[in-house]
Image 1: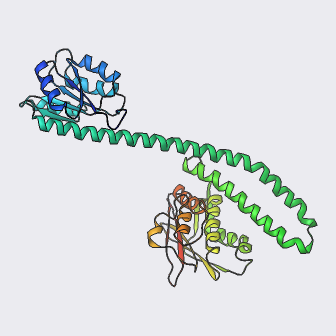
Image 2 (image 1 turned 90 degrees about the horizontal axis):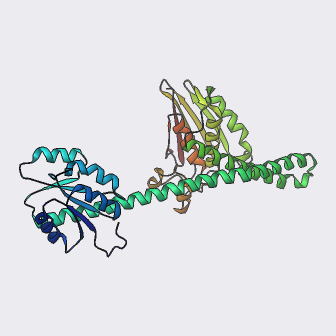
Image 3 (image 1 turned 30 degrees about the vertical axis):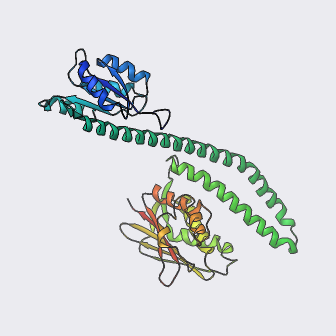
Length: 364
């Protein structure tokens, strides 16, 4: 691309006829800087040396035709390079061959000067847009690589000290006096949350890259849900929130039990944060698969955010909108677990108020 937005776009005109080159140059001179080449070989050298944005090239030239030159010009270019062919009025076969060979458009001789300038202007605009998109994609790729490196560094640097703290809690627990038991329990639960977050970071990264192999085993999802609910009762306001598990139909399915357990834990912890009454875990199995729903009686989810709630840090966007409080990765992990099993996750309004988070696992 030109070094400055104020600099005229550079156009290369290729024709063995000096008169045609002069006509094209005069037609374009007001809006563009123009380079000229008398044959395709010279054109290839100029494209390699300059930031040419559009090439206007004749089809019939000695040594190498314009059609033959099209892919070579695009390969030599420093970026996207639109190529316009100049053809004779009755040259339909060559026009077709040129378009098949990668040319972007064609103009017939004699050239309408205004049409030529407008066509070139449009291709300059399209070429610059494509270059901008490529630059943005490259920047996104670099950010993704940086994010992955940062994730690996965080997981690596946090695991060892957290494990040491956990061991310290285990050693101290038998000697905790009664009056310190509550604050000790709060610290222990906070540590467990941090360790779960670190574990989620690693799982998210591996699931995103498709590197986490599912360890499928025949699993009774009703029994799994009951076990998870029992384990998390302390997180449900020390048992004050009523949590019920309901099931109908066949709920056995070959799944990665550890991942499904983590997804269900995230959904339940999310529900506990937003209700003080009751949470229902409902499983419905049929020939197609098993549907698992976690429903609460909280504030619900606005319609305009339901589509992005399961994106990375989507729950934080909901919090900014004045809705449910979230922690960023929990629901995103649920989405990745569902996707890894060929399933899906969604949120819908619960009848009577609240939200229902629905996981679907297919049997296939």
